Image (cartoon, rainbow, N blue to C red; front, side, top):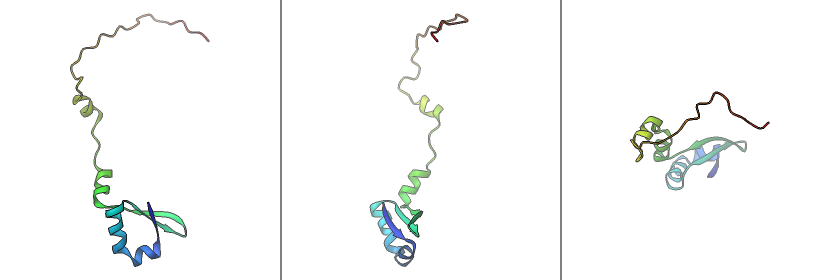
Length: 82
């Protein structure tokens, strides 16, 4: 990620925006500390896109409808080594 000092970012805003579109996120610093990031519109859209719910993910599974044979241990207690 490229770093820009705030005063350079203000003076060269057009170049900063072009770099964000071409090369990815651009970091803006104030007194050497990271303060802000300029993103391309595509990067912003990708980051803010609502994620799919777990229920939707499961409903699209190729294993949907597969019957599993699972036996459950119905005993009230189990022996464990301490």
